[in-house]
Amino acid sequence: MQALETPDEPDRITAPDWSGLNLHGESPAFCSALALLHRCARVDATVLVCGETGTGKELAARAIHYLSPRRHGPFVPINCGALPDSILEAELFGHTRGAFTDAKSDSLGVIGQAHGGTLFLDEIDSLSPRAQAAILRFAQDRSYRPLGSPQIRHADVRIVAATNADLAQLVERGQFRQDLLYRLNVLSVPLPPLRERQGDVLLLARAFVQRLVRQYGSPPRTLSERSTEWLLQPRAWPGNVRELEHLIHRAFLLCSGAQLELQASFRPATPSVPPAAPSDDGPLIASGVHVDGPSEAPTMAAFAQAKAQAIETFERRYLMAVLSQAGGNLSLAARLAGKERSRFCQLVRKHGLQRGDGVGVGKGIEHPA
Image 1 (cartoon, one colour):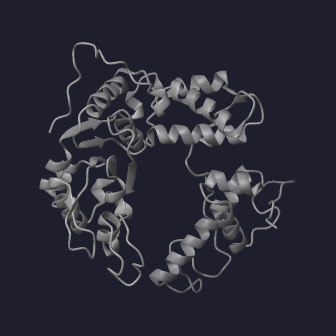
Image 2 (tube, rainbow, N blue to C red):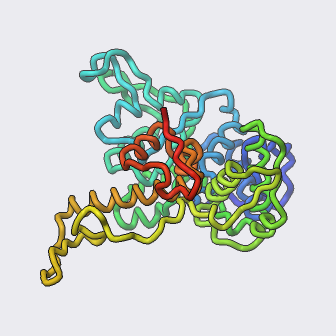
């Protein structure tokens, strides 16, 4: 089904506080998407939110919920990509005590938890064929049967699904059920990529800075003039709003003054890694080829061995690069890498990184106690 058309006449209903819903933007493309969200919120129908990675699909789904009559009910998100077939029915529909070995008590399941509210199916395109069949059956009439129960139950829920894939193309390839697409695509809200939201980049960046000031309780900070000019230049933004948010967050954590400088080295999602050097661990080189001697023909290493060596080499080089960027501070390095500090410290110990290993002269690793 086609997306709702934006009405020609102004909406007489009071405009929502979009910033309070963490949706910031004033570009025509984004305002059109917000108008569609507002209209979808006022009707109790299934909605499919489409958009590239990082465009804010879950925020849009939450806005639909909190602007709807279901706002006082629960909002239950589920990542369809993390829904294994082995526990599919129990996770979705719940189970009774004794339904299987570890079922020591009754469980509502995510559908039961969402009763009276909204069920958000994120990454709907990643559902397995079995999961698609299960969701289709429930989407038809909102009826389901908990695992181990003889009774059919009905759930009063609204379904909002999200995808960054072209479901119509997946249907053509036989990777997504056409009947499920019809059930989900009652109303459609496409979210524009950041590169098409003219003027919103700077507005978003300033909103992120203010939010980080509140989050960390730090003195007021602003973007420098050079950073402002950099943000105003046209860019591809492949990670969209999420990429911009991480860029601002990284610069905020590394900033020591009142102004944020968005240096070019901060932009990549991962720190730059130096070119691979010859391995000191033997004849296995980065390409997975053994060279036994100057006159010997090279032979391929076993796949598992080559893969393990490549992973080990990447991990060590990555850790050295991110520790160098963080000046040896483990807590900051863990945040830059997007990992928990304890797990990051385990990796540091695993590779035996010591003071001076890639963290710059006069700087060392702050080892955990």
